[in-house]
Amino acid sequence: MAKKDYYDVLGVARDADPATIKKAYRNLAMQHHPDRNPDDDEAARKMKEVNEAYAVLCDPQKRALYDAYGHAGLEGYTQDDIFRGVDFSSLFREFGFGFGDGLFDGLFGRGGSGRRRPRRGADLRYDLGLTLEEAASGVERTIELPQSSPCPSCQGTGAPADGLETCARCHGTGQMVREQRSGYGVVRQISVCGECRGQGRIVKKPCPDCQGHGMNETKKELRVEVPAGADTGYTIRFEGEGESGPGLPPGDLYVVVQVERHPLFERHGDDIYLQHDVSFTVAALGGEVMGPGLGGDVKIDVPEGAQTGAVVRVPGKGMPRPDRRGRGDQYVVVRVVTPTRLSREQKDLLRQFQRLGEKDVGQPGARKGGKG
Ligand SMILES: [Zn+2]
Ligand SMILES: [Zn+2]
Image: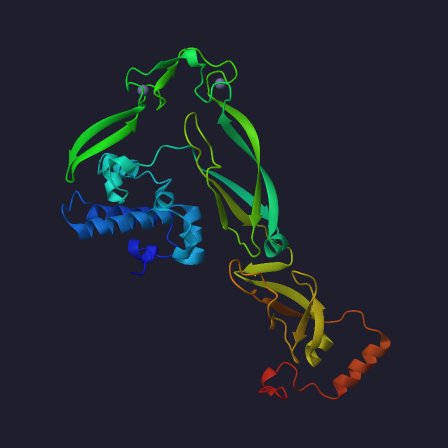
């Protein structure tokens, strides 16, 4: 079955602002929440659909990908990726629904208590600025990231082996388990032990190398390959290159391309636009002129009788299409330039031209051969 459009799911316009999206989500969540529709599979399915649409549209980065490429733009994202960053439980508390955490795992179809995603470090975002030329050719860049890694002296525990004590509250498991009755039956809610922050052990004697933090700040170099034709918002995900915390697996790194404005070219998708001056004789007689293009000068075929504002297409000279074949086109917007420094001979010739009559000037419809 084809996936429904996220904007349709929430019933909002494509240019809806975050507040409108949130309001639409709130109304639909109220309507379809399983606690209001017990044993209604259709409501549960709707709720999941609404949650997913909201998770994407409330995140500027995911929304940009969806706007640019539709569902295909999020193909590389797992369900967990899509929902990451949206704290539904606090959102629902804000809405006044007041449901426990454990319920949400079931809501999103992530399965029972055993399959809960482990806690991990934060995801990082790195904005990579590129010129239009770099975006057109594709680039390889080495970026430097601040990164924290587990302290080698204490393996991230924050203390030497004899400086640790088992946490009395969670008995060393790092987790607190609570069972709760709900419309679904018994829900096991697992939370991180607050006493030891999920470590299961408490530092009695801090490690001298990391002062008990368990982590060291280091710098890491990463090579980023941006394919030719990438536009602003193009995102490359590096799994496990995000932040790690003491005893936590790292999150992911997202490198997001930002294409800078070009002094000559304006980009519209895969096409580029250029405003170019053309002499009045070329504009009147037509002819080939050279003008700037992304990979060097291009031939511009100015038609006879071109006016200022006429648009000439130069096929295949736009941006390469990432992951697809071919390139977009270059469009040249003509600006006819009236000469200002004429020689005596040129003036004489123009007067002669004037005497021959200028009845067609300013009347494009009366031009000879106007129909082709
Ligand atoms: Zn240490
Ligand atoms: Zn504990």
